[in-house]
Length: 89
Image 1 (cartoon, helix red, strand yellow):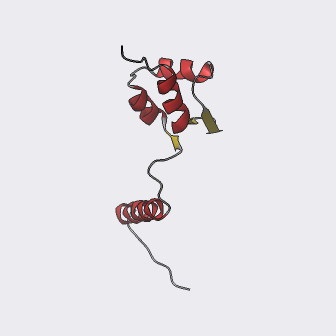
Image 2 (cartoon, one colour):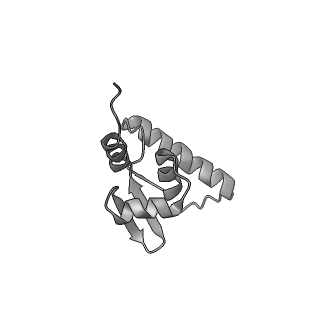
Image 3 (cartoon, one colour):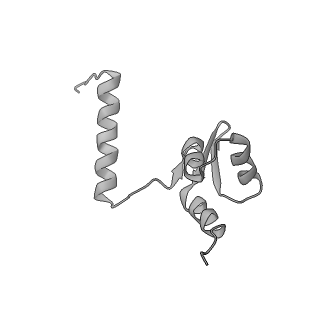
């Protein structure tokens, strides 16, 4: 058995490269689940309270795999934005 040691920086660079290649191979253009910061950026909001309100009212879907980890469904964010879009005159 052979053991390969990598420095942290090289290890994370390798992981990023593998994930990128898998996404390209499977034609995945975006992640299904994103972090709160990414969700806030998509919604153009700056308040975590507003994000929590959207979550609590069921306006956007979320997953909480662990107590302090909350992920948001990208499609539900797009749906929420489309639902609140106003048509031009």
